[in-house]
Image 1 (cartoon, helix red, strand yellow):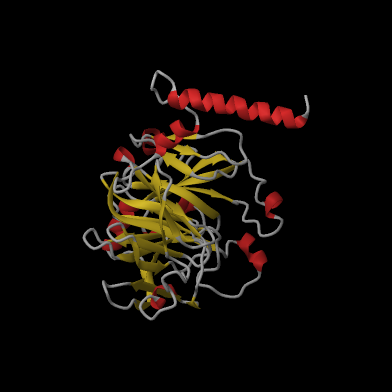
Image 2 (cartoon, helix red, strand yellow):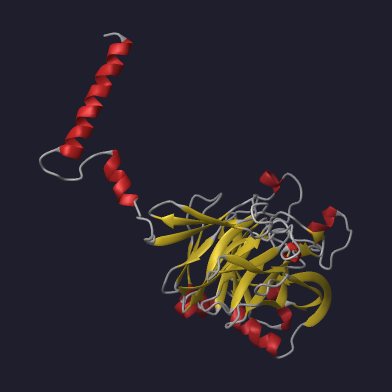
Length: 378
């Protein structure tokens, strides 16, 4: 059969199938394209079942889609200028993009997290990170507008944020790439000498207004901290951070940062840390960063901050532990009971699962395999 005749035959077959599906005596919805379209169709004026908030990556923004319709409702301007409505250009919003490095008109946005009450999304706010210039933004879910952006000082790379505690008491942020703290010019080779550090930052969220403020930054060894999750129910006072590059490599990372058989998941007791800070532990250190916020129908306000409270683990013993975990875990999750802490496999061909109850029993036993972070130089 000639190619042209084959094509004509195929069209006739498809036409017959579609005709049977749409106009058969059974009157059912057994058709092909029409049936698929009906499954996702949402009539004008009706609402979708779910709304999906997507990180924009290098766009720096947040997208809002309806499910099942797939409709794009809005691009919410967050960390980057947006010519469509003048965000970042006009005097009313320009201040939202101010940082300690000046006006930064772009970023790399990751990990939208909705505010929670007792572990359930409550529809008040959406938080998202700026990965390049370390920042966290708060979006109002009443207006779908960015209303606040806070910069995270003493950090390089903000990929490990903004992970929420059980009742949105805090947003957790960790240093993706460790740096000299305080920032100074030193040889890169000194990373191997322990002169680089990371920080775990607790960003407090006002339960009524959502306003963000840095409660404390805790110094940690100079590893690469990454995706995390806070505990639930019985482990609700803890947050768990995956990490890699415990080798503290600075060159040929694909090779040098993958030599150790194990890395760690950092178990961080935010509740005990909060208590220590309230007792006056730690000290104020010079750190310049900005908090920008947008009052309703008024120009954005940029507040320049000059100090942050800094604490070392030794100032509050028992707040941090390292859970040995197979090579370079990327990401961690906690089951709904709060018992199981699951590390994401990256270079290891296994999915490690830690027991929270067993961790609590053995964490202070000097003979166990869990390392107290206070015993490691920072």
